[in-house]
Amino acid sequence: MIRRAPSHERKTYVLDSNVLLHDPNSLFHFDEHEVVVPIVVIEEIDRFKKELNDLGRNARHFSRQLDELRTTGDEDLAAGVTLGDNGGSLRIDLCEDATVDWAWADPRSRADNLILSVARSLNESVGSAGVVILVTKDTNMRIKANALGVRAEDYEHGKVSVDDAYDGQDEMTVDAAILDALYRDGTATLDTADRTTNECLVLRNADRPNQTALARVAEEDDTVRMVRRVKEGVWGIFPRNKEQCFALDLLLDDDLKLVTLVGKAGTGKTLLAIAAGLLKSADERRYHRLLVSRPIFPLGRDIGYLPGDVEEKLNPWMKPVYDNVEFILDSRNASRVGAKSRGYQELMEQGLLEIEPLTYIRGRSIPHQYLIIDEAQNLTPHEIKTIITRAGDGTKVVLTGDPYQIDNPYVDATSNGLVYVVEKFRNSAIAGHITLTRGERSELAELAANLL
Image: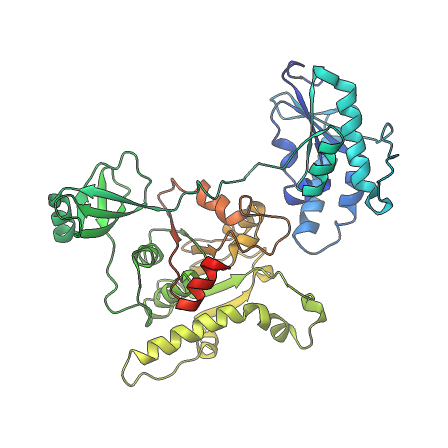
């Protein structure tokens, strides 16, 4: 017997296929309300189940969940089954009352129009006694639903407002004694009750505003510690602004197991992460190797159309990583008299550096490695979770990306995995975050990033 919430409080959510492909666990995120899945949605998802990508995995996961609900108890999917203990329920609508007789209906959009028809039919049947909401990530579906008098919303679970997102840094005006203690002892006592652990701070002298210090909130109560100074650089890379100083401090701290770097193109996210990873793995041997990876989202034809073996196929997508490593090696050699050139091929042959697409990381256990995931804004929250849970004992994970440069059609600036992780880990003692805003690649690159 389904335990329902009071009818005047209960809402009915009709889910589109793209919601379930985006988050196969979305069924359980509607609390005490009713979830309706039109049977045409199941048909649509069935077409994805054999694909060897994230859509295929999500499709299979959703199907397994439905099958478990089907075999639990004596409840029937068409009549409705219980979802958890909060009074929520799930029902498969057989589309028997759905009619698509609109003159404008495109036969090629039959599935979308049937979903709209189900939502409209439910809306008319409940009248003012209830609320029916179509949940879809398709903008045009929401527009058409509105035209049909049906309330429609985007799938909001896991979304983070980019404008209000945590940027990992702030500025404070303090007494001169605090700055003196910080420079003298490396730590100082400061009221951090309203601060997040590992939040980066610019401390400004109240009497002499030009005197500042860079600090980070410590795990201990009311304590800040000095951000480390990188006088000799990191593999030839020197921080050019306060944000990069903060970033390197987070990247070089072995106590932090997760670091997220967010910023527009040219701010140095990937460069700083790779330089820190090389120092920690190749020089200090704190980690067995540096592993750099990124998701593959082609702007043109997919990998299968490219000539050559796997390495040659992947090279166009991994080229930005290779370019950063080569730049770091060139900078390191230029700053050291008589330094012997050591290309990334040599580092890879020695097992100190590994560069591969994200597809190959899935399913692995990765212990004692410095793991960098570049372009993490192209990943869904579920994919990010899958990757971070690959981290074994002694592994540090660094996520870099720009939420405004997304190639994945199934996420946006507010729902991608990168901003999701930043928000979820903001109060964790083993995680640190910084948003980089100032471009340092070149004057032209900075101007283009701001104007175009």
